[in-house]
Length: 287
Image (cartoon, rainbow, N blue to C red):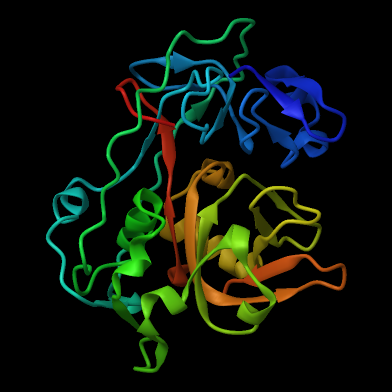
């Protein structure tokens, strides 16, 4: 899409409008047709192709506004093991390798016409078999719940162990796995596994990084201090934090509320997080 709807007054926001004033529109734009949360993708250049700036969203099925094909950076071996699962999960965070995020180069290009690319029909949901491979990272768990939000209803148990040997999480997966969009008061101040989509991000005047689910004023956010932000950039090999826009995230942490009632998830360490980044693809992949 090259246009999105600004939810404050229902006006149309172009990619140029967004680039000229990102703070006005950040977290407050949706698809004009299906009204799913939308994020901005900068134009980029690679050795093989160039793309103009555009908006992307996880559109509702059948939405005709979907013009950008997005592909998650899922691991090939990870996909092969989806149907070869055991009954329980054990995640040793200190044995999990960091994941490399797809990197592109900004080209500041905009266009006046939508791409003629269309999303392919959604494929059959995967990740529905009982259990999960042992000793796999949070990144793999994120892939499963993104492909099947009901994944935790299979009765699996999960144990997450820190390097000290202390159990951070231990029990039925469904008791700990919480969509960021649906955090309830009784899930605050307890260790949970939160997951969802980062719609936009920003850095405040203290150097803190805010990863926002949507409206940064009222909807949930994950916050990292300056040191954690530096760890994140290093561990995930990011050239720019903007590479996380539109990505799925999973984090083991606790949530609280600000004085204004906004839910805030504070990161303990960057290793307690993982991401599933989407890139513009040239194959038939749903977005």
